[in-house]
Length: 203
Image (cartoon, rainbow, N blue to C red; front, side, top):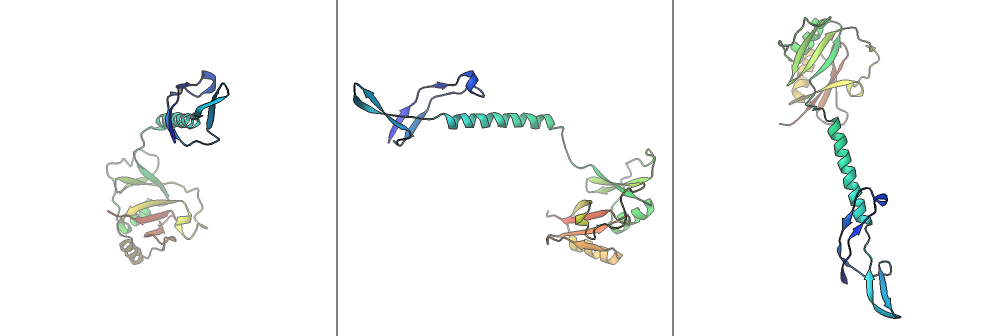
């Protein structure tokens, strides 16, 4: 086993991604692949060991790629905070409010204006976010939807107790399906067949 201080290596501009200059102190094991002999006047004056810059160059290229990726991410970072609200279409606002308020217990956000849009609607609190009910024609078919809402477009709401919601839906006669994966989640539909998922979270 031997140690070697290799000379400084600087790549020419046309052979590198960016400038690499380094000195290497390496402990190497002699082998036919990295070991050669110093010959002078036909005599062996010891061995030299080759250290390759390939690994260092690859690390340097990876570092540059990482910096480039961070630059791209910075360019696309426009300050996402959260989902503000989900828009849900309904045929009859009063019927939908009866479901969302009286069955699910959601409350109207009275601070949101209801008279500045050319259609009827209501804003309902879902934690710190909202559902915006909009009384507008629905371009989606109301029949032929999947029985299980998890296989359809759906809005997912995090809750504390799926079993309690299950009892509420049973009492109201609202059909539902449970998560097919076995996790604590329940799927149902509102009066306009919009699919809703309620998934249980901790804390």
